[in-house]
Structures are given as C-alpha cells and as structure tokens.
Image (cartoon, rainbow, N blue to C red; front, side, top):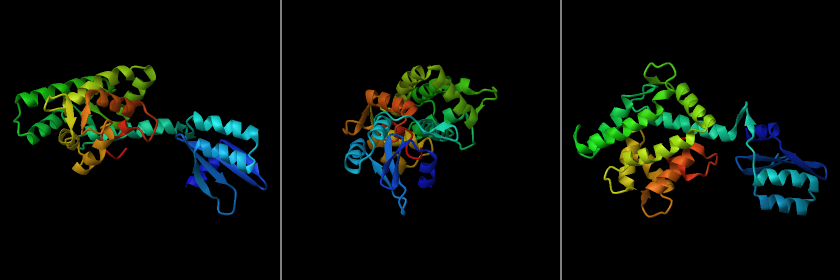
Length: 262
C-alpha cells in the first residue's frame, strides 16, 4: 500500500548509477523509495537526506529541491484532501463520536445532559446537586458554541453537519475564538473538584462519560500532562485543546484530548 502510494506522490528524485531514488514527505517525515529489486522503503531525517546526498552522489539541484520540502513540509494530497486536513478531519470525527453519548448517530441537547448526569452519579452526587448544576452549566455553554452547526435546525447535529461546522469555523478564522472559549469550558467540565487542576481520576470519569474505556483514559492522560507532575493545569489544557483543533502533526500531545481512536 505504501509503495503504491509513494509512486503516486513523488516529490523529487536523484539518480544513483542505474537506480533512481525518490523522496516523498508524509506529514513531516521523509520517506526514501529506491527502484531496486526489493523496492526498499525507509524513513529519512533531514540529516540523513544530507548524508545521502554526500555519500551517494545525489545531484545538488535534486537535494536542494528535496531538503526544503523536508525542513518545511507542505501537505501532500490524496483524493483532493491534504493529509494535514485529513488528520484534523479524523480528530473531528473522533470528537463527534465522543459527544454522541447515546450512540444515536447524531449529537443533540440530550447528549449534553447525559454526560454531566453520568459524571455526577460516579461522584455520588444526585441530580440537582451543586456539583451536577455546575457541570450542567459548563456543558450548556459548550452546547451553545456548537448548536449553530445544526444546518437544518432539526435539533440533531449529524456527522456531516459537525464536520462542515468545524471546517467553516477554521476557514473563517473564528476557530481561535472557539478554542479560547472551549479550553476553559472543557477544563471546568473535567475539574469536578474545583481545585484548578485535573487529576487522572477526574479525566477518566469525564472521558468514560463520553463512551471511552478506563484503558483509553489511562493511555491518554500522560500525553496531556505535559509537565509529568500527575496533574493537567489550565494552561496545559489550553495547549491540548489548541493542538487538538489545529495541529497537523501526528505527534501532538493534544491529539489525545478525547482519548485514543483518532
């Protein structure tokens, strides 16, 4: 599959004797494909590219064209969609599944009532308690941010409406405002103790309320805890939310905001 893909998405090549060596950049990682009998494929760092040129006689003009592509990669395309966009779309789809708490195939107001009720129950707090009311208030504000994505006004956000809404926000530039608001709202939803930090148990309760498993939460939490102190601060949450919505790097810690599966 990768070989077929590389053949369709060649950036540049250099010639080594009777063999050609192709360079392609995939989400910031350079891949080298040689037209030898074994069709070998391997990853290359920028330094390896430089060494490859020095030791294998890669033409200077070919190296000069390849090297900038690796140091500042541009998204390649697949069926008209750049892979940087593809990663963000996959994250948005993952987020949609998490907010579709009842698994109905759409996100609606009831999903934003079920999650805080579930979290409150796990905390031993009844409906109508101060904990439940605070959670519900935070979820109501999150719903207020996204309710406008309901294009046909039927009260149900389909996946296509969800994706179109987030794409529109990104294209218009309003995504930064949404991120700024959403980061604090998400933090308030998760920080049920109100101590200004999110512990692993708090995060697990919140994520499990959205259909994840405890194993998902256990795997994701260390990614979000940038300092490694066992807590996620408000500033760390802001960074995580920003990375989730905007980062095109598969290594971004914020990609794990809603757990594994993106």
